[in-house]
Amino acid sequence: MKTFASFIFLLFALQGFLGIAASAQVNLGQTDRWMKGALAAMERSDYQTANSIFRSLIDSGLPLPEEMPYYFSETLFQLGQYDNSQNFVNKYLELTGFTGQNYEAARRLKEKLKAPLAQILACEQCDRRGYRYENCSTCQGKKQTEQSCSYCKGKGVVGCSRCGASGMVKKVNVFNIVDFFECERCAGKGRLACPNCSGTGKEVSACKSCEGSGKTASTALCTHEVHAHSEAGKK
Ligand SMILES: [Zn+2]
Ligand SMILES: [Zn+2]
Ligand SMILES: [Zn+2]
Ligand SMILES: [Zn+2]
Image 1 (cartoon, protein in one colour):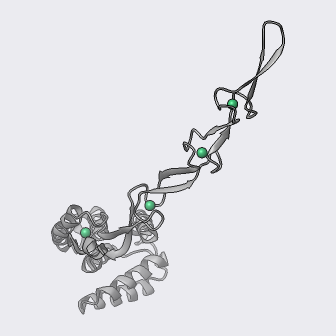
Image 2 (cartoon, protein in one colour; image 1 turned 45 degrees about the horizontal axis):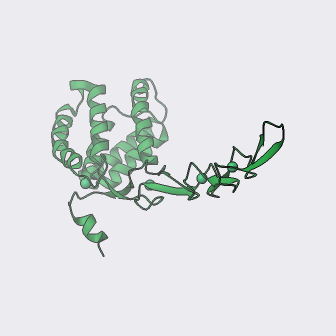
Image 3 (tube, protein in one colour; image 1 turned 90 degrees about the vertical axis):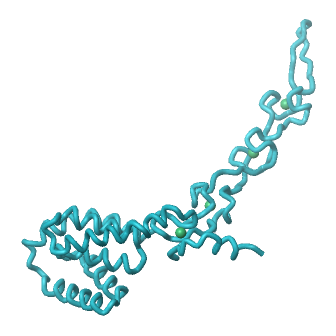
């Protein structure tokens, strides 16, 4: 979740950073070193290293080189993070247009992304970023959580309002004499089954952790193998 949020932030931040890249001369040496290191890692197909160098560059808050989003999206593609890859390659194309040094390569990457993104969309075992779903740990996949009833505080009964929980009602007859009768509503018990939980003392509501879906995305990338997960779950 945290990673996803920081990516969203980053996408917004990119626009600003690239805008000031030309005027900012501070620490360009460090940026150059990072870029060289990352590109060298990509050269030897070490996309994991290249990706973490790019992340250091992003985290540093230094202005990002114009071509960086393209290279970053390429490493994301190689690491199977297709949704993020698409976000960055789109951002790159949006910011540099066809003047970018990697315009053609970025267009090719977009083409390459189509198939894996379609697979993710068609797969029901992963979220739209391609991360495999697992049962929600809060509700164990039941989609609902049970807690004690908020209305009766879990007691299952509430005081009868007609008789003030006494079980008896007062009536003044024609001779102005006060008579007591057993309360009809609660049959003289003074209490009634809680209307909120029907006397169970329990309240069921949609699980807040998974928003009632019963599943949450894990940190494992999905292989989109239809029965892999359900077979493993059978006992
Ligand atoms: Zn849940
Ligand atoms: Zn009553
Ligand atoms: Zn209740
Ligand atoms: Zn999948």
